[in-house]
Length: 260
Image (cartoon, rainbow, N blue to C red; front, side, top):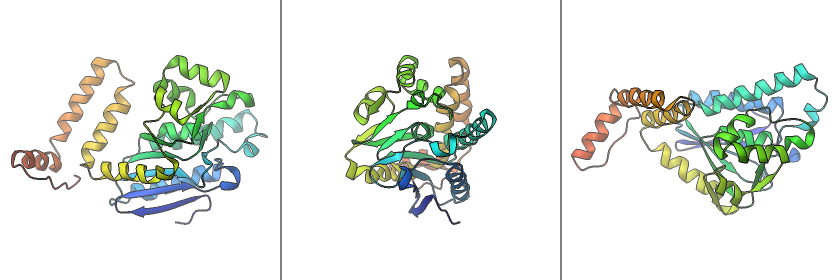
């Protein structure tokens, strides 16, 4: 496939998707959202890819937000349609069968912060900044931000950030739980790729079940969530990797995963 607004490369078991609109600080427009969706379809069908790193081109910006020049003239119905297109993409990333790691190399604001929050893990450069400043445009986060942000940082902090338009540094984002790791800017892709490779080397059936248990279970009452966990735990015992992993442990050797 050919793309105009993203770059896609694959090395070993890890795919790197780079949003490539540097003139707009990698702002997301409908075409870019569509290209990201097509790239995910391409990677979903590639059994050799086990993890994805998502980043932005250049040193300034991961994704500075939605493309305001596209959004400004929209009416209510069109704006809702664009929001739902973005929500569907972010929901797909969140439930994607392969682990997605956001490598936040600069501004992750508005739609960019919402995109990062849909990923499994967020690693930020020490120069990055994150936030939901939509209030300063007279709008609210519309791509899932009002829901994912409080799930990550808590209700009060999320309201504070969204109601004031506060932008936080990478260090502050780490402190409040918005990102999981902060590294020097020149080590960002290296660190994200290292983590992606580490996860890609694990038995993928178990990786997918862990992600399902966490993502789906958090929206359930605890008694239902642990029951759901027990069902997924049982599914592990239908995999070849469970047999191999436990045999390798008992035989004191390294497991040879088949990822099935």
